[in-house]
Image 1: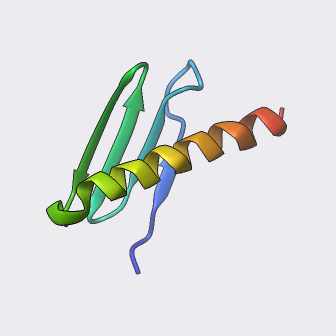
Image 2: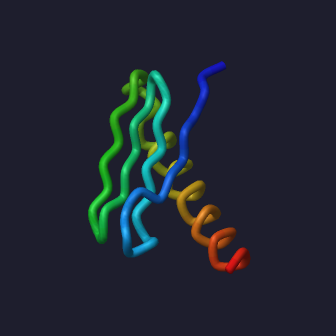
Amino acid sequence: MNEYLISFPFKKGKEVDIKSKKLHYIEIEDHTGCQVTNQENRTEIRNKCIQIADLIREIEALNK
């Protein structure tokens, strides 16, 4: 199993960066990017990353 790193590396708090050996997903303002190894599943993987990013923002809001 890959190790994943999820971070909020920017000042606004809306940006998310998810990385592993086979995945890099990033949200910056209204733009997103996703690089994956498995191109057949890239849309589903990107949608899951969006869900993860939303959950992280919810957790951050609750943890203030």
